Length: 625
Image (cartoon, rainbow, N blue to C red; front, side, top):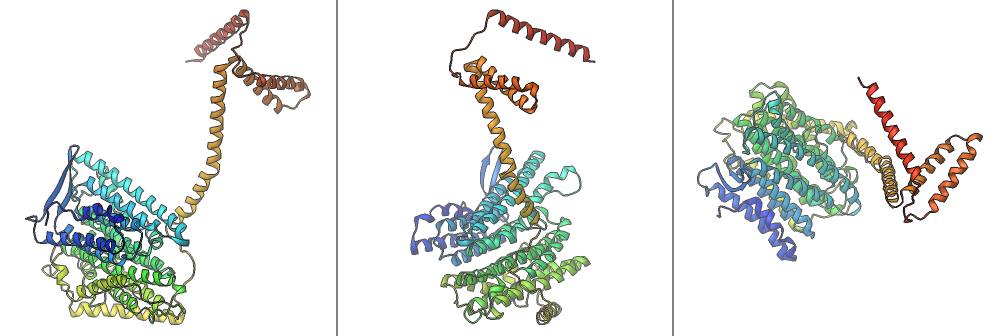
């Protein structure tokens, strides 16, 4: 193990060599980089840096130090799942020919790992923005007929994240100016103007966590990404936000309420959605809500629940997006109304999707069961009655849309007559690894518990108790019964080919109107100003060459325009005179030598101007108080 080998920099610097490889060599190189990063992180657990926590990779910057490598159990846990997920996702995307898309994926993962190991706020911000730009490109790489839609979605996506990044940077600058420290540790929290830097940093973090009403960018953009790009997007942006919130805002009460609302709010949209990847996008928001609740509660067991749930969520949500991507890859369709009956022709994809659905629904024996319940148990322990009820409702709701709706409409609904088969070998291998981990962690949770910041078992949490298993089985049984009754009675909302507007409607509607205003009236005004400035510039240029000609043209033009306004017999002869004079003045050459006037005329003009100056000065002195 080399002490200076940063896992994130393996991805970032290794990215530049991707275009140099072709064919099998390229595929091998793509797998070597995430494998090297994963081995790097695993060796960190063995204490190669000595005592944990440990910091390395220091670089001087102005009067501060950039700390690229803060190593402790929290950062190592997130780094491990990020590296493991990256390996599976690169394997899933191995058939993609575009080097640019692979480069964006690697920059994205490298940025996420940089955030996890960042020990100071400036380093955090740099990697935070690398993530934003790279993830936008994954949306823009969507080709074919959907490229224009993807371009617009990516543009809206980056506007959100650039805005969040600006707010975050403002908070960082104010925090550093106020404290004199760039260290990324827990921030102070309270009520008052002195906490403004913490508020701004908090806002920048929760925007990336897709907290309502700042969440619309996620279901708007993720479904428009490429087949493989959506899989990457499901893992890193929101979980990086969870990590920084754990690091900086553990125990902040407001996160309990935000998280509870966040778990319930997306359920209704997920039920109505027709696009499977949009359903999974809303499901992602629902699951991050559980994590935010755990951060807000802030006890060691709640933090264990948050970190373990983030770990498991990356695996099973990635597997769900892989399954949906495989359907899209092999059929070209992703709408619930266009699919059905694929379990016969795509049995392996169906099985993987069912395992992921069981995991996200927290079936006993699957990974979601051994993580989510810690957060719910802590909410009950601290008598957060409303929060506890909302979390149970959200657990039943996620089973409805991600656990039942997605596999039902994709694989078991009425046969749509689509001829398809399971995806290529690399995609099946990636899904197989994800499915194995979902079951392995559910059956042997201690392997996950051993790498958490605290040991849940030592804190008194045992996942497989009779009460816990029976209560969860009852919840899932009644939720599945409710779905069945709603389907057979026709009460369940029918799948429709339409776009459901969320809190993004003001940006879509008023934003579009603002763009029309920018393109038409505002551009017309800008053109008018531009023409006016050109006329003024031309006049001054003409005045410089021949002042008397320029004055004559200006006076004649003003008189002509003024007299045209008053169409009266009395002014007609005067109007014709100035119109003729204007035409004659324009015929004069602009570069003609400067005309002179008689000396008496010049003296008279000077006296008139002097008298005007005296009159104005006397009037000002008389009127002034």
